[in-house]
Image (cartoon, rainbow, N blue to C red; front, top):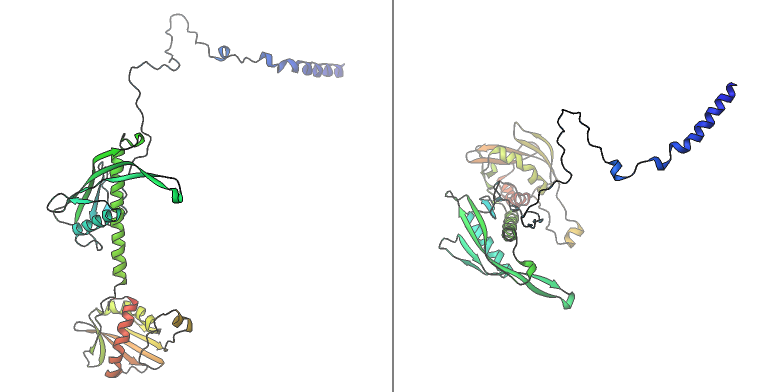
Length: 352
């Protein structure tokens, strides 16, 4: 009897399953899916309900929204900077080791920039702080190779204004558009397009200033440093090479000179300002001579061990070369050491 009850229950559940998941009973209509309004008992206030898409009507005309990214002044030159919150097409330049006198340097960079572009640049004041450009034309290229052609789409003229600080160490440059002409409808100025073109021209000038700074830095790097080392006598009357630099400065820079002279440091005594060195005459390899490299600097010394001692002098430092026993070399030898030592100082680009 129990077995029959269990079986009948299982069969009834299976039969009922067909109607439990009947899709016809699922309410899919939009009206029935919507929430019914809350039934408020009598005597209570109905809560406020926002209307769906309740947008009030308006008579205002549609305005086109500008979707272009804002233009930014790029202060890429080491002397340039932009002040926070600046709304004009303006950049500030500060005097540094590359610029020298600031305004003449900026004027030279400005003249070179427009001369390369083939655009006239007219000075409109006596101090050389205000300039007006000729027409700067923008063109679209069509075709390719021999059949390539360019057609002008727009052109504009600008005013460039330098405003130096009274101390002369800083100056601003502002670019302002004076006139604009368009030859196709798509190039008609709209929104902040005039400001974008002002910023674009200003960024080109800043880039030119940065290139001028790099050129000056490379020229300074290639320039042979001044060498103050001269043959003479130390306080004790020993033949020595005399430098106008302090003993600490000479000590800190000598190892670069040793490398150029093929001197190897085996030991040192900082408290006595003494280097213990080994010298071996350098030889030029076959491939170095083929490629035209300069022959290595040779000292008028025999291969072996030496000592180099620094002593404070009246106007700088005395550099004394000694043999392995600590005996100073002869005056004739020190005199012949002077020229190779100067060459090594220039090759190492140190200040001695």
